[in-house]
Length: 68
Image 1 (cartoon, rainbow, N blue to C red):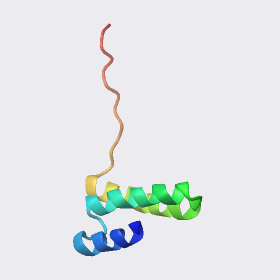
Image 2: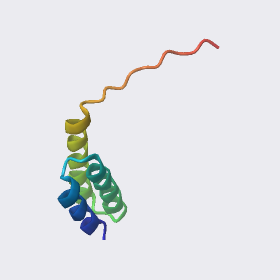
Image 3: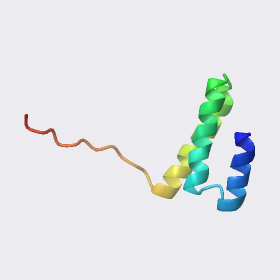
């Protein structure tokens, strides 16, 4: 079912739209819970690469420690 929704989103918005990429992540989670680890990993990588392409690389930064 989620696969059909994903195909509709890709058709409507395109494969690199944030809505599509978020749903890819959801699909990967479902596949992971069903034990389909290889497929889940491939889809998760696709979502990650697409997000990086759209948003740019996000580099974690350290927040200043608050004085206690």
